[in-house]
Image (cartoon, rainbow, N blue to C red; front, side, top):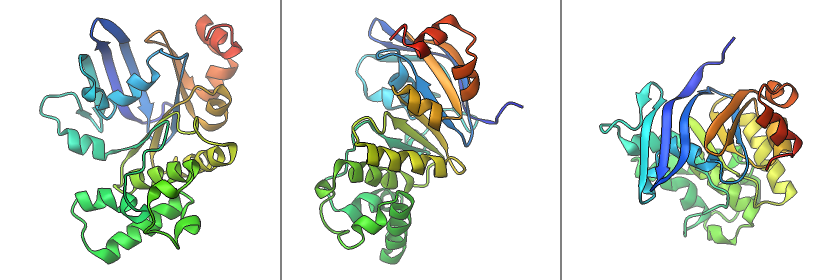
Length: 253
């Protein structure tokens, strides 16, 4: 039985100037599963991820053709509301980028922008999402200190809490553990396992072991092309395409 799709990509092509980064991508991203996008460096993994919340729009000289549907809406339709699209997506970057403000204000920032002003409500949101990110016990006594004083692993969990505080439907994660120590990486992976029942999680990873132990569904890109996709066990244990087998074995990189 095919899983329900949350994101549907049809005939997607992305160009940076004269360079084509993605070529005729057609894929369904499962709902409430962890989907890992794998492939060698420069194969289009991050570009694909950033089409889902239209962050590719911020790059000069970008050109996109095709369609990306989220909840049935083509997010590249000229009438689409980009602010609402991005509200549906919580983004976790390769390196954490806490806002230059307190720990509390980092998490409260999004809800405030979306109209929540009452202090008690904001306090509840901050506490709840710091707990979800397994950070509350470490910071509850210093919520008004600058977020920059946190360790890099704590900052990444803070960014996760900040992204979840606007109540997204989808978590986009671009190599979210690559800059972290093993303990902090484990924190993030464990949170993803817990959150998969409530969110669709799409992550880019260059660590095949991580994709195998964490993901439910795999997308393999190579030189901008979608080579193969499917449930994690099928891709790692019985890939259909020779290039997939070679990549998993380390023959191509």
